Image (cartoon, rainbow, N blue to C red):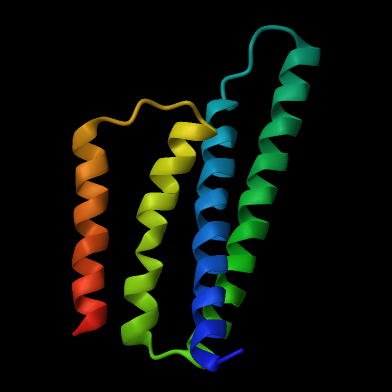
Length: 122
């Protein structure tokens, strides 16, 4: 396996782990308003801290993957490839969180990625 391909794989691992960390933090934020009752409040708090912990853990994985990617790639190539995180977050928001994603947001994400590709190819 070439060093460039290995670097791109590390960037993609970084992108996915960071995108999933944002989903975990969103889940934690959604659970931050416990309903009435002690048992329900305790369960909500435990779930929230589990999601926060998952988000932090995934962010650590992201940092490690990004560092390894930079070992094999120039930052001028790695950073534009890393912009795929915008698409990953929008996809995960739609699929996992069931958020409505407007056409304008899809267009904006696509333009960001297209701009990053142009920068990466120059």
